[in-house]
Image 1: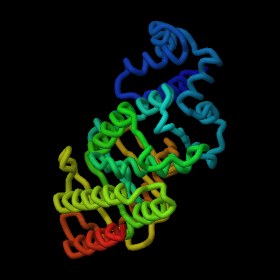
Image 2 (image 1 turned 90 degrees about the vertical axis):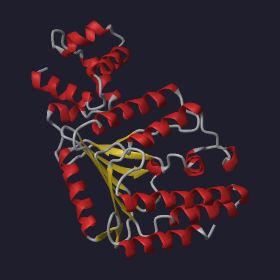
Image 3 (image 1 turned 180 degrees about the horizontal axis):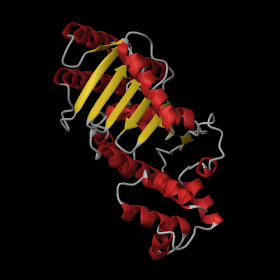
Amino acid sequence: MDNNFYKVLFTEIQKTYSKKSVMINDLSDILHIEKGAVYRRLRQDVPLTFNEIVVITKHFNISLDRLVGIEDYKNIIFQLQLINFLSPQTVDFYTLNLYMNFLKTITKSENSVIASTSNVLPHDLFSGFRYLLKFYLFVWSYHYSLEKPKHYSHILISPEMSSFFDEYMLEMKNFSKSYFVFDNGLFRFFVDRVNYFNTIRLIDKEDVLKIKEDLHSMLDYLEKMAISGKFKETGNAVNIYISDIDITTGYTYFESKNIHLTMIKSFILSYVTSYDGETFEIMKHWINALIKISTLITLTNEKQRVLFFEKQRKIVNEL
């Protein structure tokens, strides 16, 4: 293997970690070798075996074809990792921790940016709103589980998963700048589904009222954020736009000095992701184009801001 192959491979691996020591520990576990042996491979004193390359690329979802330069430039690799949120195994927490370390690597970078479009209330902002998070997990379970659907009251979030969500939602507010483009009927998806599951008796009326209370609290939170132009938890800048056209799919990109990541919403709580540079530029251009035909309600356009939140409160009151 030439030096460029190793450089590209280890660059891809390092995107997942904020600390080299953590990467060394994980590679030691993945390859079942001592840490010293990992360092020798990083220095290229000892070459990686073919089996080790296969194990690494499979574990980190890295395209081997792209590493060796034979992949068709039109074939963009997207990654999807499905997590069992209600009955998580060791591998689920391992994947979540990898993602958390990667996220922290981005947010600690100077001038980190997140921009996203959404036609549904994003769970990234649910910190402190337990009934809303529980509902998303309930909907996820309804579609994911092969067994009889669980009643909303039977959805239990393990302490470890709850701790992850708390850390994740706070970290999502650590970007230097955040841009959210919301659909004009942002709360419609949520309310319609709560009413539906209440109709088929998978959510009791008393829980509907608790969800309704959380939704009103979330509206108050978002409105204060729009007025101040920053997250109260971190003080970082945030801009909220209301799209003048319907948003059909949730798109997100992360950007820092060294990392570009594209994400497409899938399966309620998951994303398909790509590190491809061209895909990132296309996604960034698409979101920026949507921003141009949207109304900024942060620190400006008070009338439009008031009207938007009044509309969402009317939607919530349908519960």
